[in-house]
Length: 360
Image 1 (cartoon, rainbow, N blue to C red):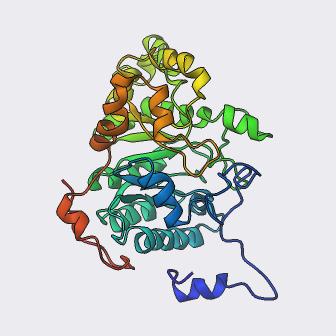
Image 2: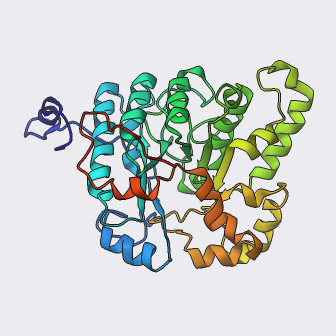
């Protein structure tokens, strides 16, 4: 609350007469058993646990922090309140997590995507902090697929700042989003929610390609997060097949979809199948040419099915390890130079522009 302007703090402070909801409810965000039981009172919020269980125990050199249900403030029905909450969340993240006590920690800029020009301004403001290495589009309050021109100001600012876009599966499962997490309607059970997690990402990625966004912004990079990658082969094959027969309808996207995937799109490994399905999973992944160049390891911590590094290494072929666990992320995100990272030990950006990004 202390990061909000006083007028908004006064408005949002609970009173005996009323309480204004701050974070929209996620349909499955607090389902019993969805988080690790010992991840802290609010799962993932305890730095000591994060350090001991994930960073130290897993030998992680760089960790990108994202939001759980907090990402839903970006689609708050009161859009201008959502804007202020997003700005406050970014400043809180910088002060609370990116203060330099742990040089391994980085994060993503949260944006109020219902307000594209405001989102662009926030990318330029908060994204100037050297430890903000991407832009999170974690929820969609517009009812539009990601290729729509509504989002152009966001992509323009992201490219200008050298920041990739991160599309997260699952956060469209709340009462305020106009697009659904699954095709045809919202999932009813947690099983449907998890099994069909790739459907919203497929729609958004297909829209980005078909609407020529990667031609309009050749420097744009997109990470599809939270739905694994075993579906990629079937989707790319279908996209290419349909392009061969219908590509004339989208002359602004002259390349085959697989070319855009390889050039501009990456996917997180999380969630991986259990070890007993490893062989089948790898077979599916290998249906994509050079898929090892497209995968970025993600743990999913503190979810119940967190993929610990050792477990993920057992599932994926040894010859992929250098790329999946290091090289692909190293070349994808906007990591700061060592000097800029060290100089990031400063207070919150507040309401002023932050100046040079200091990125390599």
